[in-house]
Length: 279
Image (cartoon, rainbow, N blue to C red; front, side, top):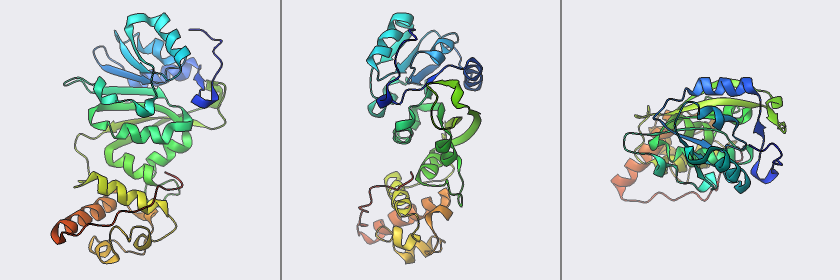
């Protein structure tokens, strides 16, 4: 790969270059021949090169056409290159019958949260995901109720996946060095989720509304979706705040909302909230 590619700020490019960190990532990922491996944002191929030592071929999703061209020139048919925006890419079409995806990548920090939500929507066709991310994002993904880091991202990730924080990565491991700390995390989608949700759309809707006004008590933040009487019926004090509720609490609220709506035939008003300040 050429080393003279100038990092493009609009793509959030920070190229991993520390060989010890690369070795630790590969050791944590444990690639095996015959697996369907997908790398997001291969960049100059620092991880790609080592991954191809363990598998005959793999898929990569790279938005930068120059880098995609360089990768094709170096690795040829061993690399299935998708020159595409990962935020819009249909990952599940790469999975085969009985062959779920294993996804790895140094994710662009400027789009990491929306990209994680996009990947969560495809989690049914994914075996596991190992990512380098901004440490703050990893902290939010792994945070529990009552933590300042706990929010919408925490709930939605933990409902679908087991979260494992693996190790921190210094800024010096990249070129150019980012202005933030980094960390590696493993997400393992549940085949059977630990909390049952009758209607995933309603669950997501209630979680989004609750954290869009995280300083308000839930009777006010989600009151247009489920009234205080129903919140109390779910065993939750309507005067609690969203950051104190567990994933199971949000599931109970969503399930009771759907069940009551089916019983009464009434449609629960949709929230007009667009999102929270800290996903």
